[in-house]
Amino acid sequence: IINGAKYAKLYDSRRFITNNLVNRLEEKLTSSKLEQFKINKIIENAIHWCLVNGFVLVPKSRKQEELMVVTYLPFTLFPTPFNKNHFEQVIDLQPHVNELINKISNNDDFMQKSFKNLTVIDNFLENLWCLYNKAKDEGYNQKINFSILRTDYMLHQGDEDISMKQVEINTIAAGFGYVSTKATMLHREILKWTENFDALKRLPHNEPVVKMAQGFAEAWRLYNVKNSIVLFLVLDIEINIADQRHLEYEIQKQEPLIEVHRCTLAELNKYGHLGEDKTLYFDDKEISIVYFRAGYDPSHFKSQVEWDTLYRIEISKAIKCPNIGTFLAGMKKIQESISIEENLEIFCKSNKNLLKSFFAEFFLLNTSENIEKVLENPENYVLKPQREGGGNNFYNQEIVSILNRIKSIETCLNGNVNGKKIMEDRYNKDFYIVMEYLRPLISHNYIISSKYQQKLYETGKQGTLEKKKITNELGVYGVLVKNGDEIVMNETCGYCLRSKLAEDNEAGVMCGSGALDSVYLV
Ligand code: ADP
Ligand code: MG
Ligand code: MG
Image 1 (tube, rainbow, N blue to C red):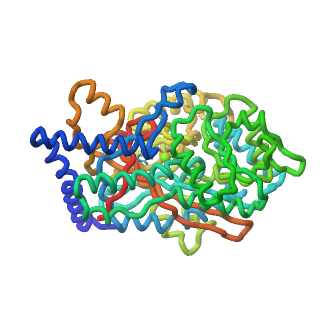
Image 2 (image 1 turned 60 degrees about the vertical axis):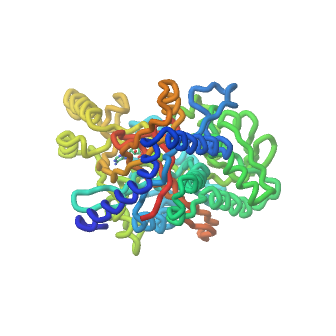
Image 3 (image 1 turned 90 degrees about the horizontal axis):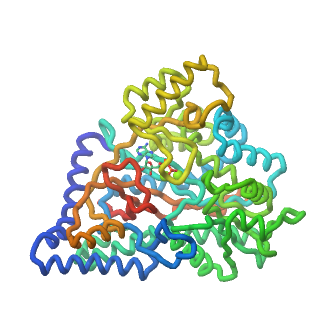
């Protein structure tokens, strides 16, 4: 934590470095026609580099038969200056987070307490919760635990200091491991093309995809069946294919004996089966690891078939990345629970204060005082349901209208709402946790996205890029492999920096409104 005076100094140094890097480009942009020509070439070089090196996505509107069309992922033209201490703090913290999540996922008492009120009002959670309990009653058939996590942070500007605050911990389908690897490589190239050679040493080594693949290889060896396959559970229409495919290729590079297959939950139902000894098969091949890149949103469960398949996976001998307990341990409700000191203490003794220093303020809407507190200053809070994948949270006026509606429903029912599914989920106060609104430090950069570039070309304004105010979110990857109680691998494996326009509340990189970035340590 840095105090006010130090903060002012740090902010100045950040601004200086940002300007240094970005201004060089800006000078070129605004000077003679020839310079304009040069800068257009640099952007063209960068875009070609992305396309040729697989820094790509499949645009969202495409139908499945058009999957062959790709475009480059949105990126910032330069890496963004980031304070070295803050960066290293959270890089060093990740093994503690890996262990914390693992302990929570194995503590059934704590899970029961945390989810008690929630499962009766949230259909999706209720289904997951039933499955968690059914699988527990059935007895677990796999003691190897394998998880790939990504803890997201913002460098939050408080009234008196700035500090890293955890936004959330992703325990399922934590993506961008490969594309972050590439974002750093792209920035290295751009710095060379713009003759910023001195800047190169300030970009930390970043190859999350390599350690993730190592996690797969370790888990696969522990499973110890020679011809067993790794199954990537995916969506029927996937736009982030490069990220997933390159993880697959990296796994095979490290352990050529591993075959990786991909299918949807419905396909696994159709072409797979569960043997009597609880071995899981796909296309008659034994599955050692099921890796979830689907199954975290209600829309991924079109019918009972998907739920039945998930259950079969859960009770099978296959290693799940993640298992359902780990998935649930990443829910926002758990974040709220462990923000209470006595709860955190159950899991951490010596590192309790360290972990807690990264937590923002959380509370529930369980009292009218809490509801009024949020209504008085809605701009200071975010309302979060138990969902993943972005675009699910509520801000400002949305919060006001939801809370007013909740209040009016409660008044007309005379407060008699406990435990009964009598209204739409989103108008139930137990549906949400409240989180303090974080105000990340602002930097400046250029965002290059195919959507924006297209607009410039259409209006004949190519090359007239504007420097924008951006904020960013730093994701830190962790890999944990455990064999029973024995820790086989517990590591930080790199980071992901996503930037968005400062004025936006949320921005999905996959929708083109956010951009991949990398850090320039100052
Ligand atoms: P998800 O699992 O859907 O990604 P997040 O908690 O990460 O849920 O929220 C999505 C986005 O909303 C974040 O990437 C961030 O941009 C924004 N956001 C979330 N929590 C906060 C917060 N406390 N303050 C400011 N912005 C937030
Ligand atoms: Mg998430
Ligand atoms: Mg998120």
